[in-house]
Length: 178
Image (cartoon, rainbow, N blue to C red):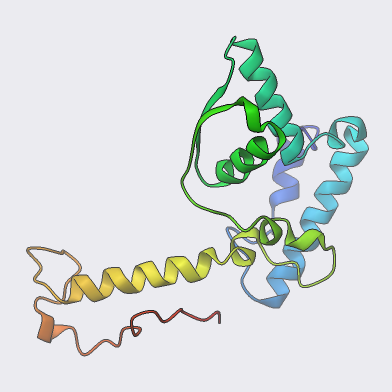
Protein backbone atom coordinates (compact mmCIF):
# COMPACT_ATOMS: atom_id res chain seq x y z
CA UNK A 1 0.00 0.00 0.00
CA UNK A 2 1.50 3.31 -1.03
CA UNK A 3 0.28 5.87 1.48
CA UNK A 4 2.65 8.68 0.57
CA UNK A 5 2.96 10.30 -2.87
CA UNK A 6 6.75 10.55 -3.12
CA UNK A 7 10.06 9.78 -1.40
CA UNK A 8 10.16 13.43 -0.34
CA UNK A 9 6.76 13.16 1.33
CA UNK A 10 7.89 9.94 3.03
CA UNK A 11 11.06 11.63 4.33
CA UNK A 12 9.04 14.58 5.60
CA UNK A 13 6.63 12.22 7.37
CA UNK A 14 9.37 10.20 9.09
CA UNK A 15 11.35 13.25 10.26
CA UNK A 16 11.08 13.66 14.00
CA UNK A 17 9.57 10.23 14.62
CA UNK A 18 11.30 8.04 17.21
CA UNK A 19 13.66 5.54 15.57
CA UNK A 20 12.97 1.92 16.41
CA UNK A 21 10.60 1.27 19.27
CA UNK A 22 9.22 4.22 21.23
CA UNK A 23 10.52 4.63 24.77
CA UNK A 24 8.41 6.32 27.40
CA UNK A 25 4.95 7.85 27.35
CA UNK A 26 5.89 10.87 25.23
CA UNK A 27 7.51 8.86 22.44
CA UNK A 28 4.70 6.30 22.58
CA UNK A 29 2.07 9.06 22.20
CA UNK A 30 4.05 10.55 19.31
CA UNK A 31 4.39 7.11 17.69
CA UNK A 32 0.66 6.38 17.99
CA UNK A 33 -0.28 9.80 16.61
CA UNK A 34 2.14 9.42 13.70
CA UNK A 35 0.83 6.02 12.68
CA UNK A 36 -2.78 7.15 13.13
CA UNK A 37 -1.96 9.99 10.71
CA UNK A 38 -0.32 7.51 8.32
CA UNK A 39 -3.44 5.35 8.47
CA UNK A 40 -5.57 8.37 7.51
CA UNK A 41 -3.24 9.08 4.58
CA UNK A 42 -3.52 5.46 3.43
CA UNK A 43 -7.28 5.62 3.67
CA UNK A 44 -7.41 8.86 1.64
CA UNK A 45 -5.10 7.48 -1.08
CA UNK A 46 -6.74 4.09 -1.59
CA UNK A 47 -9.64 3.25 0.73
CA UNK A 48 -10.71 0.25 -1.38
CA UNK A 49 -7.28 -1.42 -1.15
CA UNK A 50 -6.99 -0.63 2.57
CA UNK A 51 -10.16 -2.65 3.22
CA UNK A 52 -8.20 -5.70 2.03
CA UNK A 53 -5.02 -5.25 4.06
CA UNK A 54 -5.39 -7.89 6.76
CA UNK A 55 -3.83 -11.17 7.74
CA UNK A 56 -6.93 -13.05 6.58
CA UNK A 57 -6.72 -11.35 3.18
CA UNK A 58 -3.01 -12.17 2.98
CA UNK A 59 -3.81 -15.82 3.76
CA UNK A 60 -6.37 -15.79 0.94
CA UNK A 61 -3.71 -14.30 -1.37
CA UNK A 62 -1.34 -17.07 -0.28
CA UNK A 63 -3.95 -19.64 -1.23
CA UNK A 64 -4.30 -18.02 -4.66
CA UNK A 65 -0.52 -18.25 -5.09
CA UNK A 66 -0.69 -21.94 -4.13
CA UNK A 67 -3.33 -22.46 -6.80
CA UNK A 68 -1.39 -20.41 -9.37
CA UNK A 69 1.69 -22.64 -9.10
CA UNK A 70 -0.50 -25.74 -9.37
CA UNK A 71 0.08 -27.17 -5.89
CA UNK A 72 -2.78 -29.17 -4.39
CA UNK A 73 -1.60 -28.29 -0.89
CA UNK A 74 0.67 -25.71 0.71
CA UNK A 75 4.12 -26.43 2.10
CA UNK A 76 4.94 -23.49 4.37
CA UNK A 77 7.65 -22.20 6.69
CA UNK A 78 6.47 -19.38 8.94
CA UNK A 79 8.94 -17.12 10.73
CA UNK A 80 8.04 -14.13 12.93
CA UNK A 81 4.79 -12.63 11.55
CA UNK A 82 4.73 -15.61 9.19
CA UNK A 83 3.75 -17.81 12.13
CA UNK A 84 0.58 -15.78 12.60
CA UNK A 85 -0.04 -15.83 8.84
CA UNK A 86 0.52 -19.60 8.72
CA UNK A 87 -1.84 -20.23 11.62
CA UNK A 88 -4.46 -18.02 9.95
CA UNK A 89 -4.02 -19.90 6.65
CA UNK A 90 -4.35 -23.27 8.38
CA UNK A 91 -7.54 -22.13 10.09
CA UNK A 92 -9.04 -20.78 6.86
CA UNK A 93 -7.89 -23.67 4.64
CA UNK A 94 -7.29 -26.71 6.89
CA UNK A 95 -7.52 -29.19 4.01
CA UNK A 96 -5.00 -27.28 1.91
CA UNK A 97 -1.98 -27.69 4.21
CA UNK A 98 0.53 -30.39 3.23
CA UNK A 99 3.22 -29.40 5.73
CA UNK A 100 3.67 -26.34 7.90
CA UNK A 101 6.48 -25.31 10.21
CA UNK A 102 5.92 -22.32 12.46
CA UNK A 103 9.01 -21.08 14.34
CA UNK A 104 7.02 -19.96 17.37
CA UNK A 105 3.55 -19.72 18.74
CA UNK A 106 2.00 -16.31 18.86
CA UNK A 107 -0.92 -15.46 21.09
CA UNK A 108 -3.36 -14.32 18.40
CA UNK A 109 -5.37 -12.24 20.86
CA UNK A 110 -2.23 -10.42 22.03
CA UNK A 111 -1.01 -9.94 18.43
CA UNK A 112 -4.27 -8.20 17.55
CA UNK A 113 -4.45 -6.28 20.86
CA UNK A 114 -7.54 -8.31 21.78
CA UNK A 115 -9.32 -6.44 18.95
CA UNK A 116 -9.28 -3.36 21.16
CA UNK A 117 -8.78 0.22 20.12
CA UNK A 118 -8.64 1.34 23.75
CA UNK A 119 -5.38 2.45 25.40
CA UNK A 120 -2.81 1.30 26.20
CA UNK A 121 -1.91 0.46 22.62
CA UNK A 122 1.44 -1.22 23.13
CA UNK A 123 3.65 -2.33 20.27
CA UNK A 124 3.03 -5.84 18.97
CA UNK A 125 6.24 -7.12 20.54
CA UNK A 126 5.27 -5.84 23.99
CA UNK A 127 1.73 -7.23 23.69
CA UNK A 128 3.06 -10.68 22.77
CA UNK A 129 5.69 -10.70 25.52
CA UNK A 130 8.65 -10.82 23.13
CA UNK A 131 10.49 -8.39 25.40
CA UNK A 132 10.20 -10.81 28.32
CA UNK A 133 11.36 -13.77 26.25
CA UNK A 134 14.33 -11.82 24.87
CA UNK A 135 15.31 -10.71 28.39
CA UNK A 136 15.18 -14.30 29.68
CA UNK A 137 17.30 -15.55 26.78
CA UNK A 138 19.85 -12.76 27.27
CA UNK A 139 20.02 -13.58 30.98
CA UNK A 140 20.68 -17.25 30.22
CA UNK A 141 23.35 -16.33 27.69
CA UNK A 142 25.12 -14.00 30.12
CA UNK A 143 24.86 -16.52 32.94
CA UNK A 144 26.34 -19.32 30.86
CA UNK A 145 28.97 -17.09 29.28
CA UNK A 146 29.97 -15.72 32.68
CA UNK A 147 30.47 -19.26 33.95
CA UNK A 148 33.25 -20.02 31.47
CA UNK A 149 36.48 -18.58 30.08
CA UNK A 150 37.04 -16.07 27.29
CA UNK A 151 38.31 -18.95 25.14
CA UNK A 152 34.79 -20.43 25.21
CA UNK A 153 32.83 -17.16 25.24
CA UNK A 154 34.29 -13.84 24.10
CA UNK A 155 31.91 -11.96 26.40
CA UNK A 156 33.11 -13.75 29.53
CA UNK A 157 34.82 -11.84 32.33
CA UNK A 158 37.57 -14.47 32.13
CA UNK A 159 36.47 -17.03 34.68
CA UNK A 160 33.39 -17.96 36.67
CA UNK A 161 34.74 -16.10 39.69
CA UNK A 162 35.55 -12.91 37.71
CA UNK A 163 31.98 -12.05 36.72
CA UNK A 164 31.65 -9.74 39.71
CA UNK A 165 28.82 -11.75 41.16
CA UNK A 166 26.38 -10.57 38.49
CA UNK A 167 23.00 -11.70 39.73
CA UNK A 168 21.04 -13.92 37.43
CA UNK A 169 17.39 -14.76 37.54
CA UNK A 170 16.41 -17.85 39.50
CA UNK A 171 15.45 -20.85 37.36
CA UNK A 172 11.91 -20.51 36.08
CA UNK A 173 11.68 -16.80 36.93
CA UNK A 174 10.37 -14.40 34.33
CA UNK A 175 11.74 -10.90 33.82
CA UNK A 176 9.36 -8.04 34.47
CA UNK A 177 8.68 -5.05 32.30
CA UNK A 178 10.10 -1.69 33.26
